[in-house]
Image (tube, rainbow, N blue to C red; front, side, top):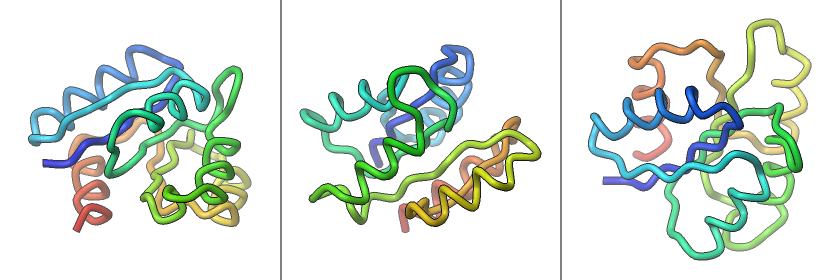
Length: 120
């Protein structure tokens, strides 16, 4: 069982992703932005992060940059959530070291498949 941190400023998205992951036997932590995510990482073990891009205070790209420049998070898998048509955002996220991408809205099957790929 893995611990997954879901970072999104919309509680409904947090809940949908969390329930899907929990049904598939993962522990889930949630944060509303990058700063909250960093706080959680300071005191909790996390195996994978799923982060939205557009959030207040610290967005997903800033979080990704911080993680890729900070031990011990440089190798932590980070899956970036993007909206349809955000190809430029995907390019920037890939350059910053994103492990993978999901397009919102995403299916439960897609979510579980990508999580499984990065945890194995």
